[in-house]
Length: 561
Image 1 (tube, rainbow, N blue to C red):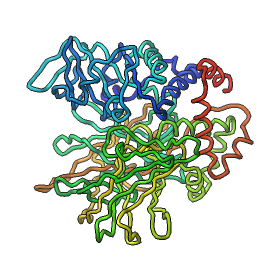
Image 2 (cartoon, rainbow, N blue to C red):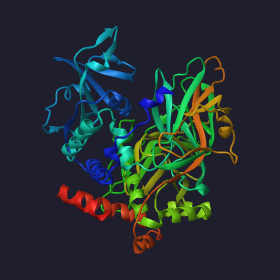
Image 3 (tube, rainbow, N blue to C red):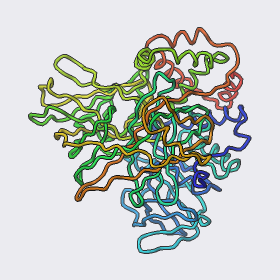
Image 4 (tube, rainbow, N blue to C red):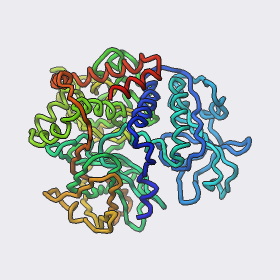
């Protein structure tokens, strides 16, 4: 169980001070605001005195440049082990050359078309490292500094925050601080590769009351099974009670070269030729076609100015005779949505826990209806001769990791030579990084269920019986730091076949809050109106974006609590 120490965070006492939490929350939120603006400059955030846990927490779409003295290389497949980091070295490619030596502390200009590269460069400065072929082995003690590219607006504030974090917490990764101060939902899932656990996503997001208990199908990409064995970890790292009813693997055997994804009902779909959109136009008329071609973090954030909701219209060429298309998205929720829901909960103040208890008796249909009316799920529609028709509403997947999603679409009512799909949600609730559609027929596939061989809690108890079936027995994780380590034995892989592996969970969770004071009843009544949560999002964002005195902003927020 010692591996969990590197993953589960123990926060210094100072981070539990409410005023410190509020101030740092605002600092972080203000640093996120520029994500919706069109700034063509970036700065480097210098991160001194941080351990390589920082590197391990960075998203996999980041591009890493290794610096030693006056030499530089691109380093890929970066992995953090017990005493070193390893990665594959190569010559710095052309698209990174202009970002190899940015001016520290100054604004560096980039072209908007290059933002997917410019804003995702991480510079690692080391005293020394060893080479074995094209592999670099970097001792942890040799890491001098990490510089991360960020948009210029708000970058100075963000770097001050991270500098403070470095002084106060030393080994805390940025992702952990964001979680501690602004995150409020979803159990975390980790997979074990090599010597440690790596974060892969959040499960059954949005199931915040028992009537909303639901199934979740998470793709487990990048797995490195050992002797046919897969190890996972489900953790509670937040102030909530988590009830996991079922945890199993679904393993799909398929031809090598074919990708497989499960839809929201757990049905497998084969993908052999995913076509990018011919057009991708936002509700404000912006052309996002180029940005949605690949997974590169140049995402559409549904942030059209002046609107409570936004949409993205996608157009794909429809092959003759096609009766079904499979929409493929790489998407996630925004941290903004997570923050916003926290602000909504605060309006209940002293009666929050009583209100939350009553939600257990509300029919699931009513709770889902409220979520739909407030634009929380990602609505998928297709244009037919009868107008826009709803295909599916994608439930939340969490804001800390993007997920590959597939939505089957019936094309029998579409007679035009193209397929038009509309994605819509509330203001800044989702981020879509890539979109495509596959028109090839589904191959005959089936998902084989694999139950847990062991499920070991931190107490050492094997609780696999609690996760074996969807029943009245739950794995209950009620405290920050609770974790269960799951072991699965994969079925034998057929010759000339590949395996796609998915984590199937079912459960729900409940927030734990200690709000006090008189509830804002007039404000809460507004949230009963369809669309008000979306309006609240745009108004709150506008207030933050227009605030021109950060000190007054923090002071006003702290005094209002």
